[in-house]
Image (cartoon, rainbow over all chains, first blue to last red; front, side):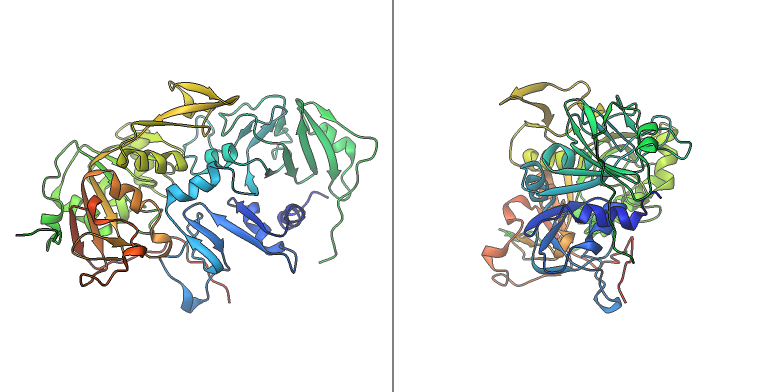
Length: 221
Length: 232
């Protein structure tokens, strides 16, 4: 079975470490916040100028001046700080964020990522994605392994305009967890019940398959 | 003698001197911390062929979106322009030009513009369409793009509190691009929720020092929420 969105978030959450400053993109990455292990302290950065994003507000707490980068109303946790967009991107570009998680349309064996523009369709903009991929060392891309028609999104070379070049080393898809090294994907883990053969068939870019590919484990919900 | 008293008492006065073809830098992120009354005044005034520099371009019928109805904007520099049908329409018709700019680069362009720095180098956008036509230079083995800074004829800014000296404090994440925009206008106009007595703002807590600000006006704000998300 392919991973659910929640399982993908759970798997990414295992990469969190106590004391990490983390930027979570829109979509599946946002769900990672729901799976921060008990007892672990993580500060979430929202690029509109908030470090230490808290839970959604209660109805009474809703404040139009308190939003995240997805324009959702949020709260600030104790220990939070709020600052300008220039300060926010100074911490992103300066490499101060410990982990960035974001979605993508395509990644390739050179660590290129395409996530913001499909030619011929309306282009809405890159927001902060180009800054995030250029500024972070530790990035996890979350995406579906293949399109609905079964076409691989893990490619020898991205076909869409890039968000960043040579900056991606780790990818979690609904089928597998992979790393990118020396111009190849390396299969590290597979989703429960998903065969190595299926992953190989759906990976267009060069893929190294180790002798043993462990299956991801998830606690029963 | 006005001295350092930068208060104005009408929106007409606040935007006096704004003319067709000018560049306006606006603060705000989405609909958060946008100078909504100054935008409404630009609409009322009917100024045209504006270049607008702002992270977003509002939504249909609110924020900078209201300037699209009468086609007052000819060019937008922004990082994200979704959530706006009229904008899409004018973009596809070629009635409006858009220069999509990475968010951090946009913030830095404003900051640098206000600080007298004509250009800077950043790794953001290297190898992407953003790099087209730009100088790339290598520092310590990594490639960087040269990005030119931005200044505006006007900057329109939304603050929380100000004093008559033009010192401004922002509230929560309504800060965003506002302090950067404030530095980059030849004429910077700040609208706030409250103008406080001199000495009331703690000098150590000022976000925008009055030197950047030319006019201050007190307004009332709708503060529309784009995505109201709550927990039970």
